[in-house]
Length: 106
Image 1 (cartoon, helix red, strand yellow):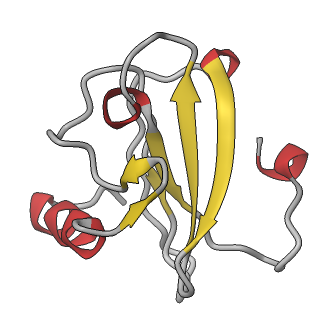
Image 2 (cartoon, helix red, strand yellow; image 1 turned 180 degrees about the horizontal axis):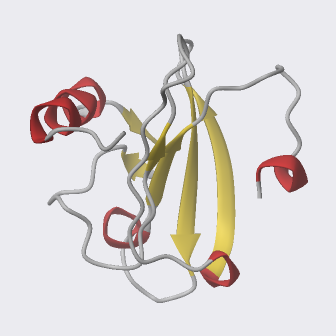
Image 3 (spheres, helix red, strand yellow; image 1 turned 60 degrees about the vertical axis):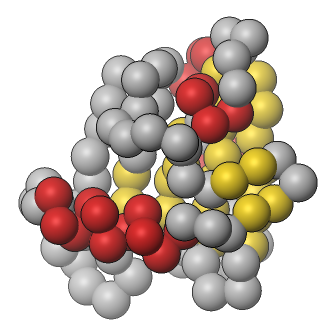
């Protein structure tokens, strides 16, 4: 099911302020403005929701798995010369195992 606006806000609030060497988890503005995809899957039931924007897998030039100790996030940056915050995709995945290969989630 599609998430309501409040649920989306809650999701981003959890990430706001958290950083890595690549920058903020949360883009400076939402919704995304360039080729993003956002897929969020619930880890406690089978009624997961997902919201997908304009995004093509062939645009990817960088993949980085980040683990914050609770959830694992996948950043996907497009080939265009724009900032990470503008071009990244944040994907929260419910792993079926702890050893997921990149080709298994592509």
